[in-house]
Image 1 (cartoon, helix red, strand yellow):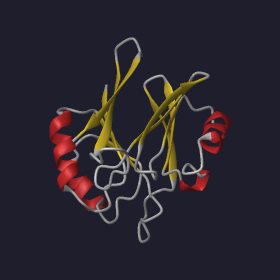
Image 2: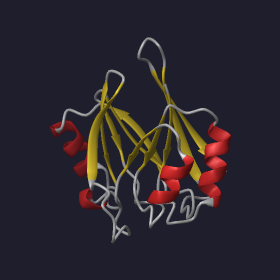
Image 3: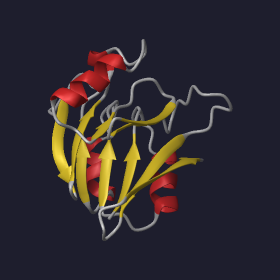
Image 4: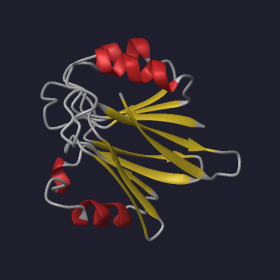
Length: 159
């Protein structure tokens, strides 16, 4: 299973289109918030299973605030991250993930890529496609793969 993980597109589709093209065939698409009205666009261009949540800039949307679901044998928890103070550190979101029994915790909001594996949990942020804030300021996304044996692999990608 090949999964494209993006965040913080803020209604701009050029970088998203490029990430979709570079990713190739995907089985699942995850958007971690701040879609800013791009829901219909995503519905039109992404043809696989989608999980899209609302961010702090998604004011007039019916998107869920957060979601839990299974990816193969793994329990995933996705949220934009602002309710868990991710700009201040990872402690709160890690504790929330642990309380939910999550193997995978995914968030956005900071516009910076982040990856940590700790105590059997993977915590990640793909960064922002449209407004990156890390050094070099290149739009970023992540590819996650689950092989036939259930083994996870992750690749941070930059535009």
